[in-house]
Amino acid sequence: MRIATFNVNGVNARLPNLLRWLEAERPDVVCLQELKADQCIVPLTALEAAGYGAVWQGQRSWNGVAILARGATPVLTRRALPGDPDDAQVRYIEAAVNGVIIASLYLPNGNPRPGPKFDYKLAWLERLIAHAAELMAAGVPVVLAGDYNVVPTEANIYPGHHERENALLHPRSRSAFVRLMDQGWTDALRRLQPEGPLWTFWAYLHQRWPNDKGMRLDHLLLSPDLATRLVDAGVSRDVRREAGASDHAPAWVSLGNEARRRGRSRASRASTSPAVNGDLGRRWPPRTSL
DNA sequence: ATGCCTGGGCGCCCCAGA
Image (cartoon, rainbow, N blue to C red; front, side):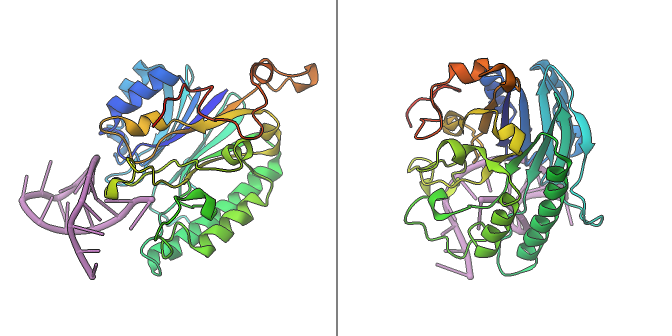
């Protein structure tokens, strides 16, 4: 089961790129963020023609999240993050696919800081921590996937940056992320590639992509039972290279079958020791050089 | 303090993004 997360930065503007990627990589589950489209203008027909069922929560101009499933329709479990009924921003949706709870989340950016936007980010993080604790306590298989707008450590941003005042790097954003992780979630990409660049975002400005000056903002957090099934993970950098690309690239995980009691799964046998120093883009999807 | 780029809308300029 391959699960991907992709901040598309406008689902209608990005539709050709999105469809090309879906056709090329055929992920089983896709979490989308920044639809930037009202509920009624999300291109459901095109997504269905590509073989995907969807649940989504649109919003005019900004935000908006979706979950797609290949050959199935996700079963909606939540269309908002609990904890603030007055929150008008659409940044969370949750659904069950194949017995796994999938969350597609778009954490607030938080800039400029200090100010109300940073306060909103920290409050949203607290609500996420509270809801994640409930999911963890329920003992069900969960993937918390999306654009966290948090660079967890200095190893997750290009060297020599001048972003110290950025809300994405702020100690309070990072400490909240650590408290979330301390519940027992596994950061899938860093589990398989503990060191080295693993960017998922390159700003449109300042030639960031040609210079490979990126940061890691998009994360897939796995509940403990799913972490034991983790076979592979990576970033589809090719998608960022295309004409008309989003400023984010998809990140993805591959989970083996749950039948560990019958021995190693087929997916596990097919993979050669991915635990450390793996070239994460190599096996799936095919990766070419920058 | 601002533009650099990109998408969307109260659209031909502005806001937000990260």
